Image 1: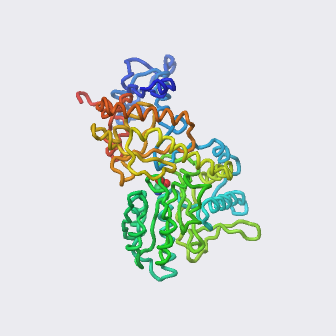
Image 2: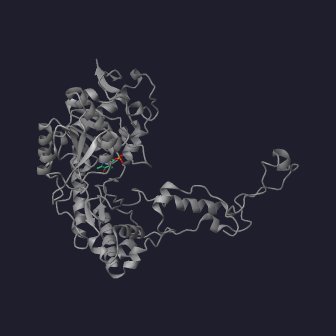
Length: 499
Ligand SMILES: *Cc1c(COP(=O)(O)O)cnc(C)c1O
């Protein structure tokens, strides 16, 4: 443990017994006064089948013990409000409280989606303004705010490409090209949208190989999905050229813009040939990720795809806003009530709070990632040397020689009081360690993280066992993560004697 981390109090212990272990016979939370009415036997009153004498193994604790135990546990959930959350690709940035304030205003929080449209003009205006801001930031013409996540945005985008090709060329075509540096959701989306996936290899700099692309693309290709910046945290230098190659063959370019936080205010996908893209408001635009939702993955498009956008489409007639459900060529509805409204409000609050200053947020995010890169590149292996954008990808190649993997280092970070970075992703980097500080972090916080990472690198060299058996400060160490997700134990059951 480094002195600086100790001083910051970050190495908090998360090692507390279960409430069952704090139990002592006879302790009670509440004491009732002596009975001053006749006692009724529960078996008589309820029937023997429904009455029980007690609960075997139930903990006996006082009220304040219960209070303190659960209050302490409630602070153990690592959160961006407690410290840096360096999960690469996830963009765990701070959710400004002004967003929460705006989303809770009367007239926004209390609106009902079935309210007549004449009485919802303010809310519809919020949606319209957000769509306009996103069009400005991305350089696209228009879009839809409906999709509830990045992945759903991808599916919506590919369904738009499908509808466009069917409408204009009479067939949806067969294949979607995906570079090997793409996010994992991209190939999954293409398959669900009914396409075959063909891989486009990256060159030695981690960029799309244009020569290969030219060989592969033909009239069976519906389009290409490009994660930009790629999952290597690297800008696709060849993207405009890739767009030209695709367009020459009647195919479209989809950009996975989940990482738009590296471009906002600096470069616009609409200007470099992108036809359709999604954004992750719960990444770039600072809305909460939530426990699996609700998020928002708006899809932005060029004019050619507008006729196919999901219904309802927001339209302005005689100064009034209305939702149009009658679009003949629309792919249909992808989400109830035009999307996760509360999230959209927060994203608009963030966008307007920054205004053109969103460029500063982008530059700070890129600066932070490169600061961490510079401070760590002498101790961790750097698989691709292209300039980093909003995130930096190392590999565990050096530590692997001592048997220490990216997973071990991530687990050891927990002892230092940090949430782990993203492990083992992107797939084209064996033993990847993907770090994204975001613009939220101060230099002090980045320094603490660097301290922790450097201390762990030293431990991995001198005492690899310590890292391989981490975390040491938590109640339980390594869990079967698959079983924890697939077969979670969510209910307490009394211990059967002898087990
Ligand atoms: C996060 C992410 C996604 C998926 O977004 P969800 O909202 O989790 O569905 C897709 N692509 C990239 C590049 C991402 O970082």
